[in-house]
Length: 262
View (cartoon, rainbow, N blue to C red):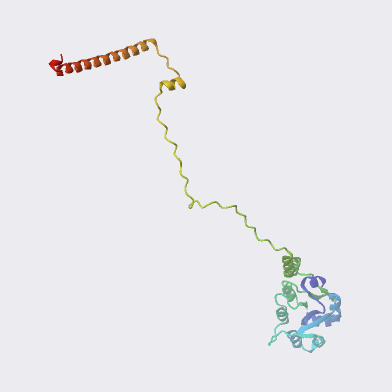
């Protein structure tokens, strides 16, 4: 029972729900049912019986009157059945799918025992050869026990809340500092592109410039003679024109002068 107590929360006094067959067999084997249950379960026991199970004992007559008298000493468990039903169905109905009230079933019915093995957290006690025994934990109970142990290992809601409170508050993400902003490109005047100055016209090289900065050109002998000849012929033409004009002027003067002056 210690495994049931740790896994499913059974506590003393244990509520032992007894059926009609167990009452009859206990009287046949001359067993002290309450004492034997205390030894098997290793704790104080509170035996209980439903009205439907007592009704089954009444139907069997005065032959089993000692069993009826034993059942009357147990606490009545309300099953809320207005009409009596078979004891196996009544106990199965009281236990339900989860055995919410943590009953220990004390029965000699094999059909009921097989049905209760499919329900987790249901201890079953029966008599085998005049010896009362507690059946091993069923497979359904083992699976439910392992699941309960896993749940106990997880942190509770209170522990989770405490852990959340103990954690330092997360700092808000820092905003990246932006550098100085430049001027709005739409509000800035465009820079005027300076055109390069027009190149100055080249002056013809003079004699002075030739002497100062430039190199003197070397004139060949034939070219110099031709230049002198051309310059001399030019002077001759000039003299001829001047002489002709002088002759014309003198002739005009001669015609215009009076004869007495000669």
